[in-house]
Length: 106
Image 1 (cartoon, one colour):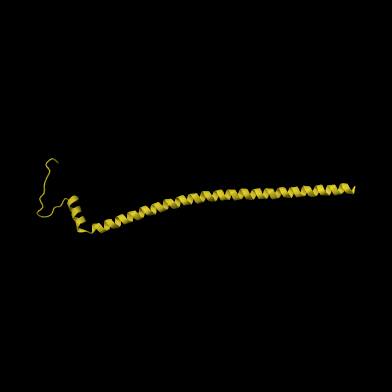
Image 2 (cartoon, rainbow, N blue to C red):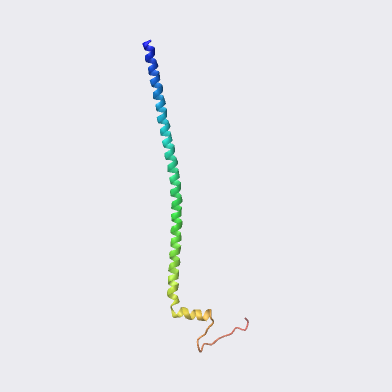
């Protein structure tokens, strides 16, 4: 009888160990899945943010080029040559004693 009770206790202990072992496995699997999901999610966000950074860098470069263009244009506007060219081309003004040729085919 004592042998049977000893064997039954051992079986119960083995079953308890197996249950706790399965719970540990389940917890480990859940941790790995959570870690994997978090890692993939963060990698997707990092790629998205990196592409946005590249887009913003290109926009900044384009704006800097535009600022440089307008700064150069602003320097040229103050020159006498630019003022004279605008007066001749857009306003069709002439200097005194300039010879004006009129195209009769127009």
